[in-house]
Length: 254
Image 1 (cartoon, helix red, strand yellow):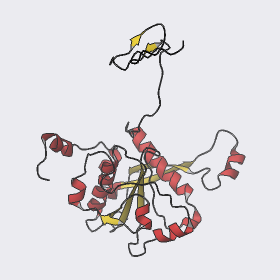
Image 2 (image 1 turned 135 degrees about the vertical axis):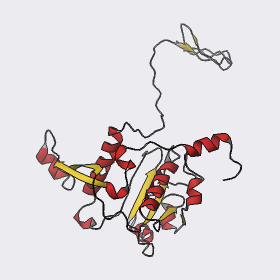
Image 3 (image 1 turned 60 degrees about the vertical axis):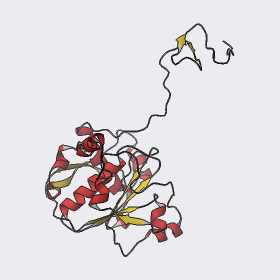
Image 4 (image 1 turned 30 degrees about the horizontal axis):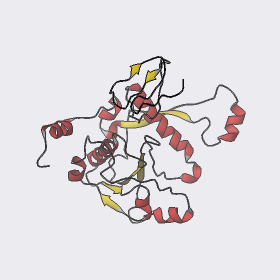
């Protein structure tokens, strides 16, 4: 990476914080299932509404044995939604863990969001490519999009038998903050229940290590009822007895 500024060099040297359990070798990280969960009320009704997820056990990442970690894998990454901080580092984390477990594993990036799957538009993310995007915000490495995979035709196009993917991660922008997707061996036995187990494990690990995912703030919080004067010419608002616009001489009704 030639012609880097001192700021860029410092940024590339930063090492993102990880939960303690994720700092260990992948072969030593396991998912531990706890006791089945139970709602505090309306158990029968909730079980009927959510038959695949109700009562799922609490799942946590913990030190253990993961004999499957050394298998060579082909993993695809999709970015969807608008730009968000940390997207590149999430991909970097996947890339680093994948290569550390088995250097023969391959990470693919579907370009332009979910449409990249339908249009067969993908790229292999190599070490050189990944290193040039580390610790930088946005989704520039493979782009993003808002295409929804909803129709049967879209889903049929999304199947890439020659890649034989085992896992697929999907990260979303400002509308979802973070989304994790993956293939499982037996979808007929349940999909949502597996999703809940994995997301609960991720949540517990982040919460235990005080890690938060940045999310763009769009709400306007008014913490004072004191009327303000809004001026086009003055950089600072001035407190007065009424709200008025002084830039063009017009005064709003009190």
